[in-house]
Image 1: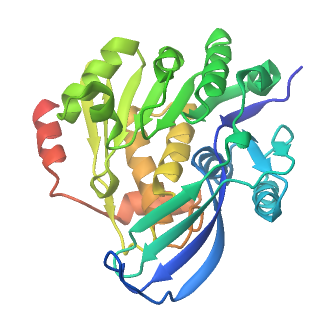
Image 2 (image 1 turned 180 degrees about the vertical axis):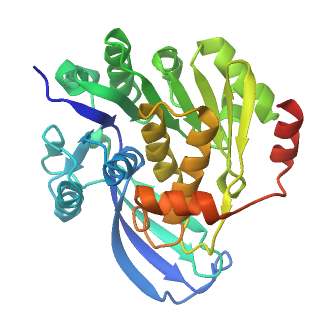
Length: 318
């Protein structure tokens, strides 16, 4: 019998260098940085860590190089309690990394990243044993044929699939039919459909591929989702933002938690926004991942944005 996990993630990880600057320099300019630090992150790995912090039993599958950054990533995941038995260590390759410049004034970040082609996971490497026994599978879009196979294996076994996608990947149209919960970036629906209106774009994607929920994160404006023929909007929380790095990844991990708890969609979105807001109050992609009690306090006491055009339009459609 396969080992049971609430949440299995197949996708990216990264070990980053953060550079904190007092203000972002103009093009061609210079600016001294105030602080430098190594920080672990990655779309899927950070979502899985979020689930682990919330009390889920989790497993992460991806690739790292056999370098110091890979060792740091694996040590971090093990320390969190995430199962990494099937992470592949690629000899002679560097782990995916990024240099992230964080503006101290706003908390906004600029990312310069690199992933060696040799880190790509191939579909023939994806094993059914990774998926069997999972309560939910979470993927990204980067190694499209591999995550596509993982999604198909999950669908064949009746395991729901969530996907975090921020851009168009070649062949991703073969992945989406096996996705139950699409949570795209603010740019993805327009890129995919060439429709600027987010409501129309999400409607088209959902009708084309038949996923249960088609959603998008909106950064500081919250999140928008379509389910069962209607739209749900949840505004973001207002916090003193230190670093936005990883906020979307944490949102996805919290979303997975809410789905597994079978919460109604509006509750899932509110909770995910609260967890993302908590993470923005500390440096690093996983620096501020909260626990359940902290998210509940944010939900009860936190201030929500109330000036979004999307919110006004969503309210009109409810």
